[in-house]
Length: 173
Image 1 (cartoon, rainbow, N blue to C red):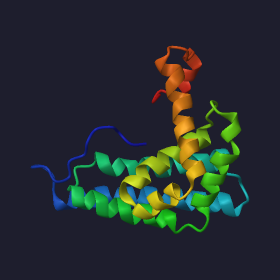
Image 2: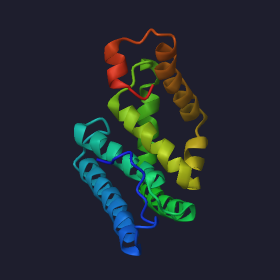
Image 3: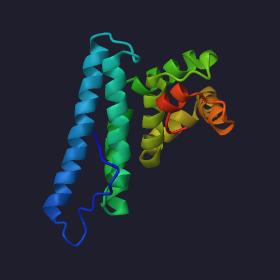
Image 4: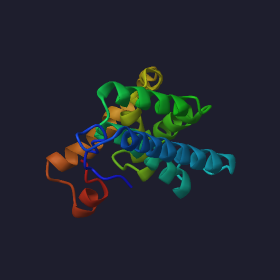
């Protein structure tokens, strides 16, 4: 969906129009992902359904992509806060995401794609939005779960105990 190349809309060859197009694309991607999330949830689909997990993953990527742009730092944080705040205002979505993770706490070290998508969103959104950070920080259990989940991913990789399929599924470990 997104390339890892830093896009420089404000470089010598960049123009104001290119910057506006870049910001517009990020906004559209975020709105599309939010719309897919709303639709899936309104149809009663659980967070771990393919459609909802895919929308969560795309949402986290879209918000995280902001840091890869050539926007000025102040513009990145303004845009990131604006888009993350929209997710924060999505009713009980953040609470449902936290409950989903905590429900699976005893199943660690196995990490589902949904949990990975949720934590990707959390990590990207907390860079920009203090409300999301406060919401996550308010739950001691969620912070402990996050630490345990990251340890479950990191420790087998570091100790060389991870098998090939584990490394394939979780290349970020």
